[in-house]
Length: 68
Image (cartoon, rainbow, N blue to C red):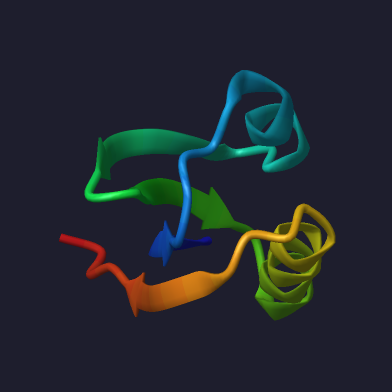
């Protein structure tokens, strides 16, 4: 399982967050939302990217977090 931090270009509301299963909003500032969560494999990660696209959330930055 790998943990990611994804920053998107707009606030993420509760309905959108339901579609982003396994991720939570940890910060909203400057019109951006920072999401943190885990995926089990690369297929799940690509599924998350597709859901962000479907929700019309533009990805600003993606960071894979260390296991520490």
